[in-house]
Length: 396
Image (cartoon, rainbow, N blue to C red; front, top):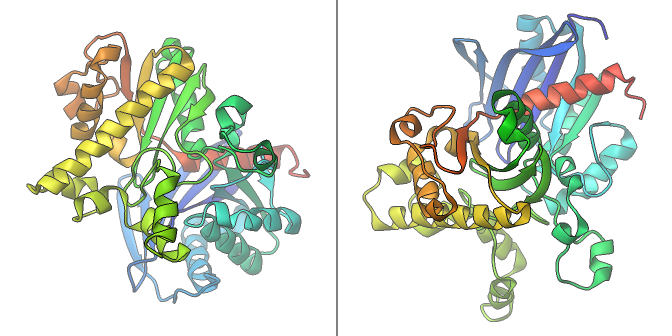
């Protein structure tokens, strides 16, 4: 792969596709632009950001199960605009890698089958990754594709952290805590080492707060614990996901209320969290604007559960030197950050109101715990891992 070649990344959500386009300059991926497609809005539009320039390109493609038309039209536009004749590889974010995948991996027929077998463990995101990989393979079979796994970053956790108090045979069969948002946490660990190296070497809880939300306990940049476990509905409440739940609730819904398991799954993944508690919206921005008491209660519950989990992760670390807020809510909503930190005053957490409202890098008021706001960039990690694999030969 020669200098000047192009890398394309896909970062799928449950109903969106985020793109990243990178050029290799001096041996490092440098971003050319980003893009996104919201599959909920028909007719589709390709939203492109290049520096300060923003372009929305109307799309003619129909949404099919295989996404061939969508990806074909997307690649066509990118090729005409960014000279994709030099496209060397496509990197994919894959939410679940199970126990098999511990780092970036060249996608082959065998590895794709293993990725697809993990769909039941991440039903909101894994199917999208599989569809995108297959679409690119169909349209551009000459391209090597690389998978980057969210679970891989958490493989440094001990079995004590990963184990449920269930029969040992289930752990051996893969029923364990995996952790997610690993690409985001990998980026944050790297950025933290650059902007606050003393804190990075210590005990830090990173809070990835977006539509999906989780927390990660970092010690010297290494994952020691996290709130998401076996599935992406575990941990703190999210936009539409419930977070940690007494399993007796599921038993009650199935046995006493006679809910089919499909209805239980839909409620836990799509009708709970901020949406379920408020009955108004899954978007915290809408709830912050609302005067309804249900909106306030949903936000209060969100902040309370997050602060409680930060305290629990501090226990894993044996103390707390820093907190990092990241992702959409964590980076842009000072009211939510303030509410979370208010609950953590007893741990020595105090924030400066002016810095917090400005979304400054450092927002603490000089207490015992440094509090930072660091934007995450999962696409950059995907590009760097894909480039690493290509530079290494991508033969494994």
